[in-house]
Length: 108
Image 1 (cartoon, rainbow, N blue to C red):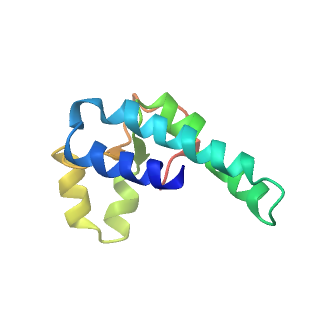
Image 2: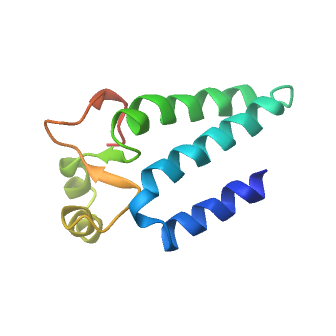
């Protein structure tokens, strides 16, 4: 199943750009399912909780894209990533703005 999730990620980046959010959500569901199947292995509970917290609030609430703080990118001198995000060239992330839901969960 992990291989299927990986292949879906590659396909979503190359072929299904218009359906990327749906595929990204499907990939997270598969990942969480695999983690829950292996919940008895040491560390899997922590990974499952982290994946769920990374999935439900920021990604589901923001159309499958993780919001990123513009000021944090500037402070980290990640100007090329900022430029890509400003031009909507990154499928997995989006710049946080006034419409960002559940902003306290997003990546700074």
